[in-house]
Length: 249
Image 1 (cartoon, helix red, strand yellow):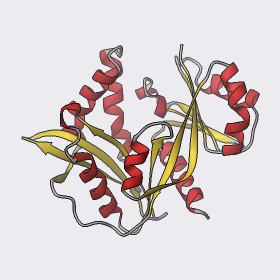
Image 2: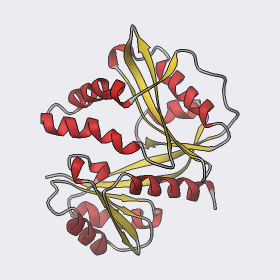
Image 3: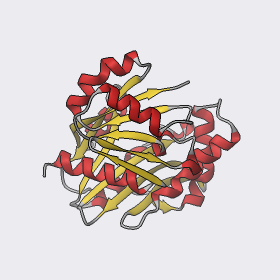
Image 4: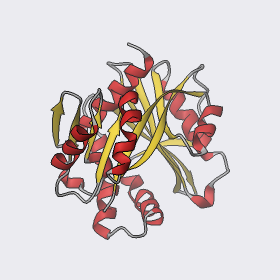
């Protein structure tokens, strides 16, 4: 199994673990979690093998019927590239993320980084969503904040890392470790706008790298945005891509 295969296996199993309902198909699977209907991450189709656009569109409409959105995440690069045109014609926007693998020795402990709880993160996460998407209703904000409870799953060591300033969390990120597969993921790095460019994000990522040790550690980064370059300076190298096709009402 290649490192990319290992990473994709981890991602797919982790997505399934957060769902209330999983529907398996020959070319992928679909997940639903109606407790968090506003969360696209918890209500989507994941394509893992070769198929065609009519099959993808039919599965998305069947599985996500009743939802305002459609989200198709494709982990099979040839299918993503071949189907991009047809999905665009069907009204789907396309984004691609780099899967980046950390390479290099674990660093020393990062000063100022601590472990926090879901309860600690509730207010900063909710405030971040409210600032990013001001059109969200209070119920939708609650769902996008409280959905993080699905990250606490048997078999995964989930650690929330944070930096505080005067007791207030100003930067945080998640580390998920699955020791049976020897794989870990870093995700959801967020820094309050008033506290950027102070080294907080670097400290949180560095501490995640240290805690992952010699495990296969990866993260996802938007292929077109600057964070990929930041992660590159910390030792992360692209090894593959995921493709995300989304249609909004």
